[in-house]
Length: 199
Image (tube, rainbow, N blue to C red):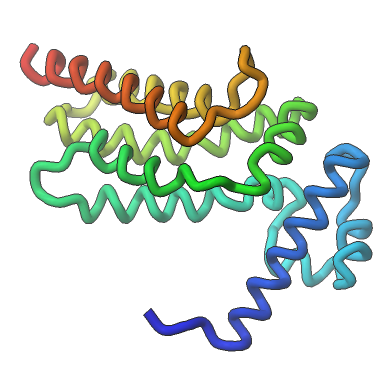
């Protein structure tokens, strides 16, 4: 894959600066009390430039979800014959477990704002719909079959619990701990899917 050109590198640098500055301000002042104008001033750009990268202030917090959606959709479309939805998800999770320097900061920002908590649930809905369709294909499920929705909801709940635990321990899981939990969940769901498929 060719290296990005100067224009692309400058755009990525600007985008990264907006994210870094905005998250620092959200953490310091609170999400609701931080304005686009303040983010623009701290990033030394115009508010109009921010909107060229992010449609709203909220989109800065959830900057990674569009990429996650795109990666998941493509992986499910291109999965090899015989690969299940759970196989694809595990591969994506393994690739996503690398440390994210913004994860803990965003976790704290979201947990301290009820609007962001509601928005997070809403923004996960398209990801869940992707999984519903793929699981329905795995099961050969027809319209009106609720089994794919049940399995997809369980997957989303498990991944949310691993990435944003609300109970002890208060710190995020380590990479190894997260993968171990995910493998336990996937093992359980594989057994359930087999039972559903053969039932």
